[in-house]
Length: 115
Length: 109
Image 1 (cartoon, rainbow over the protein chains, first blue to last red):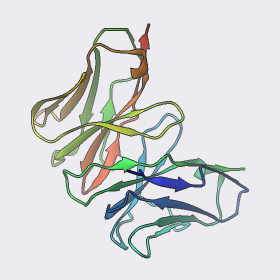
Image 2 (image 1 turned 120 degrees about the vertical axis):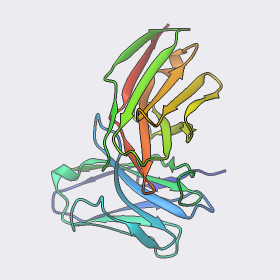
Image 3 (image 1 turned 135 degrees about the horizontal axis):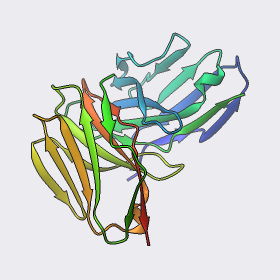
Image 4 (image 1 turned 30 degrees about the vertical axis):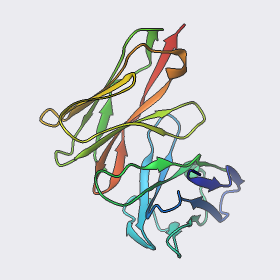
């Protein structure tokens, strides 16, 4: 079946601009996660949703970052007033449900470059 | 986030040999452990999950878990050039994953 999809695959923006990154999880998966990966590092947790609500947003670096999942499927990560330090690959993952035994599957990522 | 440490690479092994990757974690209450493979320029791909102490085998891959020592490892038997990638250890706590920095493996033909 179809995996997690993310759009755009690449995004170049100027410092100070607003960007939106989209994630479409695997069909039927109720849990959705956002991670960020910088070069040479492992992914770093940002936020996860169970259904429509943000269950844990403790990884968001500051209030310029916000994410929504209004209908419990597609999610959008929103970054205001982008900074060069926001440049990274933003990864979305989904799992069938929450819980320790549920595996997370990653999408291809969005490479964000802030100039 | 919880700390996850992996042995520093890069790790170079000849084709057909065993590649051994190690990972330690700090959160004693973690219950779920995963290995992801990441090819250059691609996203992480799940290759193994392990939840109980002991060994778990899947094809040429064997994951080993020792919760008392807070240690998890991955063995790749009969290494192939296609196994050349970065391997990420991930530990789940409170439903979210904490990752190590990864170990890059190169299999020499």
